[in-house]
Length: 308
Image 1 (cartoon, one colour):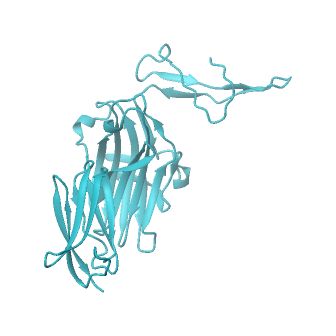
Image 2 (cartoon, helix red, strand yellow):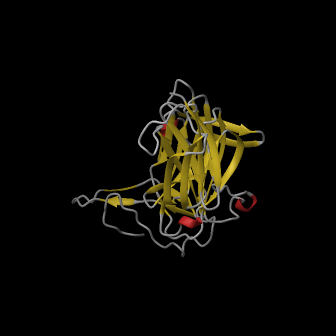
Image 3 (cartoon, helix red, strand yellow):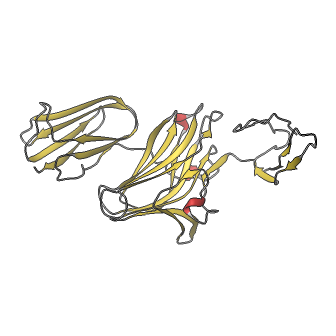
């Protein structure tokens, strides 16, 4: 019943409390457009409908015949639509990413729209996934975009049976817009990643969130890769919250050869690249080196081999 002046790329919002009174109600709508000519040409759009609900499916692949049919996403370059069943649990159409030695070492799938979550104080992201990451250095990242920056909310490694993953986003709400991104990293070997529908919701009981363990990030320090290395290697670690981080490298005699200090580093995954250069600016010699990460609550050490 609203009459509006035409403005491209504008979202119109209004209260419908008198029409839609409770969750599950269906609202049918269409748009009538009339031009300013003397003939007064007009036309009606097709009729559509929406269902009042407290969730938004932000990744739904069931209507796609191919990876290029996915709406609101920039899909994986090497992804494909794949019908997946896990015993009696039929997921339907999913996104399957397979990377082999002949493919790229990385691939990204990114949501091209943002959800306006400024009216919500609680919310969860729910999705189903399975992984078969053959090499120890292979991983997948689940990231959300909020405040213009991407934040890693989970890092997936190794082999994971089909599972439901749920992430509490309440710490980023309200007053934010949210988008989603998946990053696959395969330095070597084989990688398979299956992703089912992704959903944002605000009701703890809607999809059984109470019965599903939340998957918060935990502190971790991964083995550097490549290892052995020459001349550079990557060191990846994950933080469950913002904290000060110190990373030191020692030789086998216990002498410090390199150190990094990051103050108030953000929650998520981070990477250091060591080029085999010591604090004195000179290349270190062939040998075994110990990488030690230290925060106020966590410590961990890895062994690295430099071959020149």
